[in-house]
Length: 116
Length: 116
Image (tube, rainbow over all chains, first blue to last red; front, side):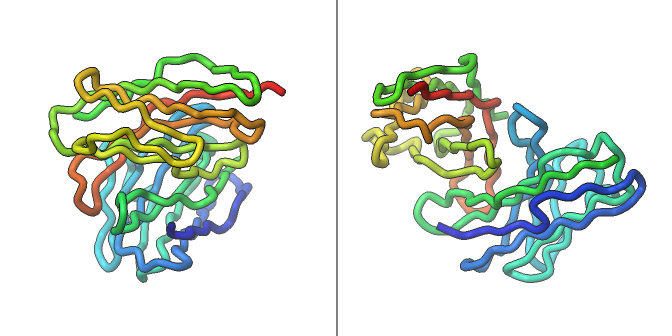
């Protein structure tokens, strides 16, 4: 299946700063990537669907101006958390959908964000 | 709307024994796919097994099998010969519209602990 990387794997930042998280599809050209958020011991919540060359589609309740998504190439999507606050602290995971077989999603290793 | 229900509390199993993790789903669509993912403490989501709504046979992947009962809308995961490395959180997920770019809806997950 597709191999997905994320960078950084963890980040600590001060309140009010912006943080960029990269999601790369290493062996597969992904026209679509997904961004999820997960709080401890909870399920994954889809934040947005990232489409290469076009605007991301955000889920209801997700602030577009706070969580900026850019899918500039077939192998890279970025999530920028702007003006981060402690409540943004979470585990952020991206995935790509492989358009073969079961069309299953393959996930990156995740990025743990802590906002102080 | 689609819904995945995982209601079991934390599950415990003795090493080398089999364990069943329950999942029920709700959808009005006829075409859908069901997935199970494993999330160890490292956070990475690992795809385990897939069952399509039109598949007549239960899916199997090594030690994993899916007990699919369509009329009851259940898709339970059976892990045979449990290993210590199976200790993790397990998520059941559903995708409606098996075309590309379709979203996954996740259950809240079940924590499995394998005892030596």
